Length: 385
Image (tube, rainbow, N blue to C red):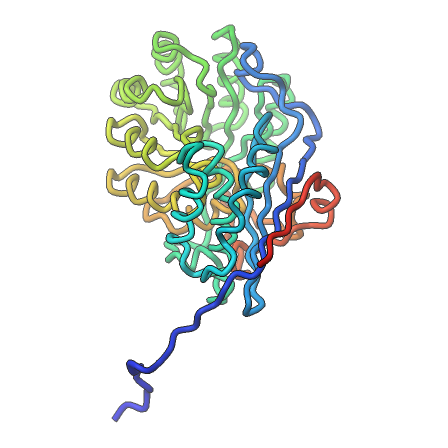
């Protein structure tokens, strides 16, 4: 006879309550101004900093979850202000009820919409709740979600911006591969298409058969995108990213059905609904959701399910500290984008070896906020009962 104890109707599940929410607005300076095609075409200014929104959620049981969202060029103060206004919604809630809390947060600020800045503020709370839940279980987040692998293919973007001379791009590409990163992505979308073709050809020649991707950052019209996709076909690219405006689903679908080189997009979409429409019309071979931009992990998992149902590849945008766990839980072999920009914000760093980024064995996301991040803090808010 089994000696295992069976649960009875009188057993009580563990219930915890949120007792404190601490918000921090952190300005992360970049070592050099960053320029992609949007800068060269005059649509945006060079990027000199990243605005980070951190949420630290504490409970009666003494647990703490850490989450973050971010904004580039503008929007950081707005995210912080919105998060501060809706933070009282969390107090007294059971932190395990993540989907319920997400709905309460989004409806608390629904008059400003259910996408964009409002859900990007919610993302910091949502990620913190998932971090806390995994810590309660004593598991890395990937394991809590149900991982398919312990490491994910990784590619580097930060050495291939358009402001960098081609020799610098080539040197950084070689250094990235030597450091254990598997693939290289460089920016395209230069006003002179011949410059793009020359730069990409030079990188292909330098790195040989290593995986190579390009990113146009939405800067081509449909005619230019067709010409450039055709010109890039012989270079055996892993993908061509954001060749068109992020909301031109039909245009992206046309490119995806015409050319052999896969089309990747999705990073600028700010809701599950926007991703659902992109996927429905066949606008991407490779979907690139961004957890902070779609409202956190709760919403990202819905996008993952939609992509998997259509047998699509996944390559999450930015925020590798979050996305390594989500990519590890995707059924199809994904890619994760490597950016070292956020390294100073955390005490721990991800291991990269053999072309792959490895999931941390630490519980939760596996990161803690550094003292340097505390020094870069420009505003805080402490919500208690």
